[in-house]
Length: 223
Image 1: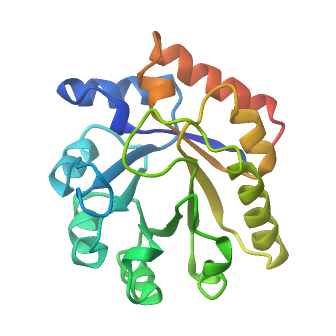
Image 2 (image 1 turned 90 degrees about the horizontal axis):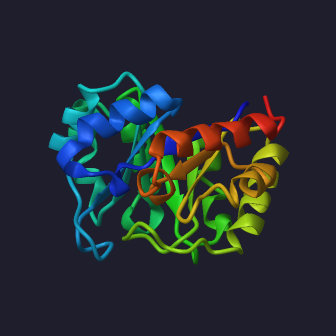
């Protein structure tokens, strides 16, 4: 399938969030990415289901909600009811990952697992067939604007090979330091969803940045 762009609202101006969502949607974004942080699992605090519900009212684009929180099982229902189209959890935060994935899927939304830079893909071996997508972190989670970790490219390639070898239909998304300079490499490695925060909302012209990402995707040749 053709790769997609998911601007991350973590880098948007929260005072004008509705305008930011509308702007990237009109510019060609495919998905809206929302990072939920609790100040415990990661050293930052962002927002909860109330904001996801508010964003849901502003767009028809899918909402991809990344739960960087210590107890995701306690909040799956709330985020699903708020309008999330997909939820990803970190395996380190789930005592029983299979149960967590099944609860997410019971809401008829997509279920994913997020992998930190130091988390090996082999830990997904027994759960891979149950996933809709995998979120590969290319920075250590917690803050936007960090530098991309180059070894992520090899990790994506290995993950893509694992998925292909099992004839599974699982999307790979990448978050952290994603920009115009490495987007083509990420797609070539096997990335299906480019999550871009600072490179979109921190750009002098965010609309133009989205269009540039879309041009790179079109030139990748993947359909």
